[in-house]
Amino acid sequence: MPKPNLSFTLCIGFAILSITMAACTAPQPTTIAPETSSPIASPEPTIDLNPTLTPTAAPKAAPSATASTFQPQQGQIVTGQINDPSLSRPLPYRIYLPPGYNEAPYQRYPTLYMFHGLTYTDSQWDKLGADEAANKLIETGKTGPFIIVMPWERTGLDYEQAVINVLIPYVEKHYRGRPGSKWRALGGISRGAGWALRIGLKHPDCFSAIGLHSPAIISPDLFLIPFWVKDLPQELHPRLWIDIGDRDTLRPSTLELVQLLDDLGWSYAFHLQPGNHIASYWSSHLEEYLNWYSSAWDE
Image (spheres, rainbow, N blue to C red):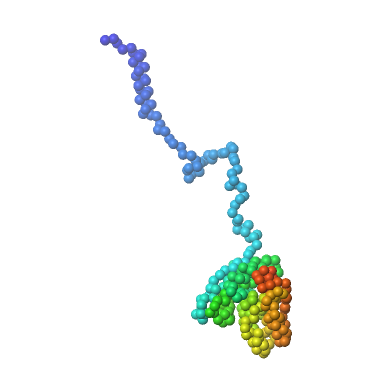
């Protein structure tokens, strides 16, 4: 048998030894997580040598509280109903709360009670734009802030009793209406004006102003008015406003009311203006109405 070549044997031996040592001593592979996946900040922050601006960097953020303070405040209309044991059915209402109402929790406000016309509901003055007109007058400084209450004259309600004994106390308790006749006024459209005249003259200690817009006087009030005001002291006479369109079918009865007031010596403001018994007539004069009601409150 031939002798193995010593050099060849040594080479083979060293090769086998190297492979064995490499297999035993080679480090296991280590996975390095990206820096962004670790909750611990990297001591060597990555520097982006080519930064790009993204849309989120643009100043297009949601309005901040500071920015909103520069927005003009608006009044708001809220709705509700009064369930009182003295009423035969609930009394729904809408109420306009002036700008700044929620920011002044201790302030009390003059209150205007506005009655709707026949076949309408508490929404009539709202739809005519009473809140928008009030916002404009208050925001421009033409008048101070005030509340507008718009109740619904529902069939079956004793409306006079509901307004005097239930609605007014409720508003002054829950909505910070300012108490006292000086700080209350009432008015209405058509039949609502008839209610305003009846309630205002029968309760002159409750209101300082009555507004009649295209009035439909409730029968037989035209004959009762002299009895209601006969012994009323002059200082208790509420301010009185009457307006009607020159083409309104209620113009003759309104002129009859004006003549009666003249006979009684009751002072009033009378306006015969172009128009008819329609929504566009009343909405076009809303600012004029509200300015008149609130004029005494600004003194």
